[in-house]
Image (tube, rainbow, N blue to C red):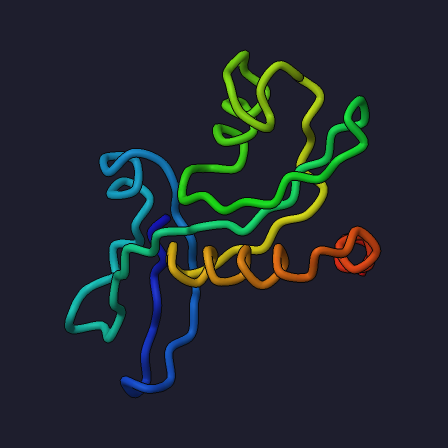
Length: 127
């Protein structure tokens, strides 16, 4: 994900556009006025996610994180593979949070897993 920010001063950034896709597509989407002279700056932001999946057939939650797109990660979970989510194709994303990096997403995963409480997880999802 590439975000275009306008900055009146270095500590006061304001997002004014988001662009996605291949590097060529992103380049084509950029406003022409984005330059050093105009005070606009470009940042490449890696979106990572903390996510909770649910399987109706297992009646279980899966808690994880990824820096892939959620759609691609869900596709992998629903594919035929070994592991906790393998063998079933009914996993669905019931909750997610976007994080600025993998470390932050992983830390959130560890916090939620430490709850060891279905009730707390269901409260998080419902809020």
